[in-house]
Length: 264
Ligand SMILES: Nc1ncnc2c1ncn2[C@@H]1O[C@H](COP(=O)(O)OP(=O)(O)OP(=O)(O)O)[C@@H](O)[C@H]1O
Image (cartoon, rainbow, N blue to C red; front, side, top):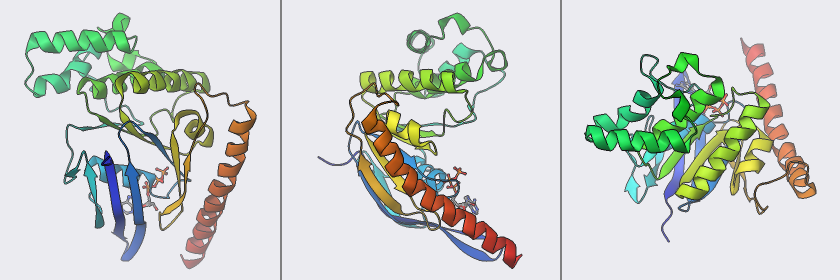
């Protein structure tokens, strides 16, 4: 079967302060339909750069990416993105935020209203439909951000540290919610995190990235039954193994920063 997302020898070079910086190099990933993939690595290893390339926001400088068999040349309706900072319209109510994308797609008022009701129920937001984002907790805002993306029915969801700003309990609730939606809706998910535990809790597959240049350091299938228990021995064994890999890259990051400070 053709992969749902194909990342083929992708590289990205930034030109900054008169220097070339290789953010990504030779990334190859074939992601089948329905797989939940976490990109894991320390700050600066290119996770967001890769996700933005798949989203079509910032094209790679070499290689190519296809989604659903089509070359990615820009953003597209088959790829929905959820950001850490919610990306909500503060002047619109919860219901209007969810319906916005549908209206600009030209759906009728009745079809939009029906779909909005469905999503409000799915994300347990029905009691909040008339509120504005500023009157919601961080967890509720992130539910709303997910509802907005689900409204468009994109088969691929791209998520950039979506739960990074939430407290531990809210984060776990939303992780469970996301697993439920993923299983029910059969989405392909590419999810960026620097939390090893989050990656093991969620993913079918974890791609650990190296720091500068960003390459694939390890590509691991997580074969543990869900819902996973972070206290479980196999969970912890994998956590130790991945922790070692991420630590090595964090140290490279740290040495790089010391070297840059010495040059300046
Ligand atoms: N527009 C840009 N111009 C120049 N350099 C950039 C640009 N965007 C990202 N970079 C650099 O590319 C590298 C990868 O950045 P990226 O944000 O993808 O990393 P990340 O793994 O997502 O980190 P974080 O978890 O901190 O977001 C970093 O060294 C960053 O400084």
